[in-house]
Length: 374
Length: 245
Ligand SMILES: Nc1ncnc2c1ncn2[C@@H]1O[C@H](COP(=O)(O)OP(=O)(O)OP(=O)(O)O)[C@@H](O)[C@H]1O
Ligand SMILES: [Mg+2]
Image (cartoon, rainbow over all chains, first blue to last red; front, side, top):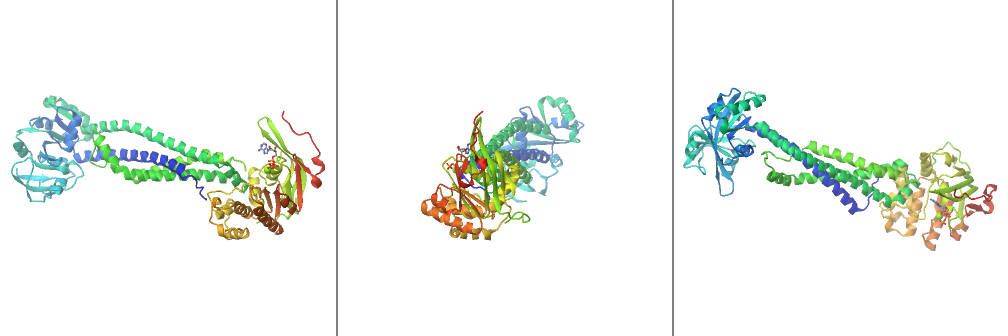
């Protein structure tokens, strides 16, 4: 069917409105998907169900344990025994974390660990071996890449005296571990002058479903007064709930934008119609049926919407990087995976939405047009 | 293109009897035609004349199946227009009537060629060769890819005439086709009319122009919605005009 080209400026504005609405919708969906996946895989990589930290704010604690930073206060190593004695606990891995600021604004995060850590990180792939002596280090993939360290190299680590041997390289995990350097726990305690203390304990349960009971029992033990027991799944769930409430609002905004764009399209086509009433009359006079006229205007509206939708999706894809970094700087807790994930499903959903919207928006103008007499 | 080859081409193309048209605007009514009776044979060239407001456009719209009479019967190429449904009248307009407007009525966003092809498009048919032949006939072969705004008035009207011919309708009503043209251009268009009439088309022209009116082989003269002269039949006897209330 022959397209009915007209006013480029007005059509442009209408198309822009649709594009903005669709871009908002697509970004929102992409964020929702990316964020949830990010949280889930972050949990997987962590390999732990419960995080035991010193008393303090659990959100800070989680963020620190997950992404590495200096610890404000410490746990006594003796608590570890108590944690291990709780029946639901399969593995309790102690850790002492220390971050040394570097000149470039980053920091060197050193984590003292024991072999228990490996039992949690079932997803790890090592080249070389886990640190056997105090002078061995296991290096995360990002650190190794940035510093050009290779297996067997003798290296100096900021914040640690003397030189050490890279005994192991950690294959990329996609998580925070990539940015850490791991040393034996006792060595970390020795260098840092923090004898018999820990910054956190990662706990893996025999049965993740038994989380609530395990948390209760951990809180009830003698050392429970001095420890903060953070159930990670709960923590993630809380974060998700926070995001969800915001998302509800954003969803409403996107919906309104969609509605506004739709009325915009309808309105613009109605205006075209009122300017072209006589022309439609002529079309009817030379043999167009009401159905022909209906199709003409309906398709015109649909095309406008699909054009806008396609532009919007394109814009959303182009802008997703910017949106990503903006979100990262504005969110209390962001997983290391991409937050904004544009996948084909979202693109399809948005296109279907556009077509639906266009079809709806086109009904009124098309119906009106088809009732213009010859 | 004959739509119904089985129907015998009747020599009488239009048969109007007691044709009346009353327009309603809210509570007001305007009687534009009062029981007009006449016949038009195939191949005639008829001029419809009369002072402004006498009902010429109203009559032509009825003859072009654009509107339905308030009273009386109108048989157009064998079809009773008043008893047809909207889609039936669409079919009539599409295949049996080629309307030409005073304002040309070209779609400004389509090229000349696309404009001419429009009625064929609505008739679900596509014949590019015929379109270009028609453009040659009206002398617009070199303007096929122009937009209407790039044409002169006479060229626009010739494009409109080509468009009216594309579905090969037997009837060809034109409402003041030269009203927006200067004398010289008007005469060119008139020449085109005569040529097409000579080829067998039935031409109905509403006109204020005496030259055109005298070129026709018959004249229907309207006064206040009534026919004057030889075609005035008994049903056009003066009546009380329909008034408000
Ligand atoms: N759609 C309409 N609604 C109401 N009244 C109408 C309508 N169309 C025409 N009329 C009235 O019907 C009468 C005849 O109008 P018509 O257009 O047929 O005249 P005309 O002979 O074509 O005049 P002109 O030479 O000025 O074009 C006029 O009084 C006009 O006001
Ligand atoms: Mg008129």
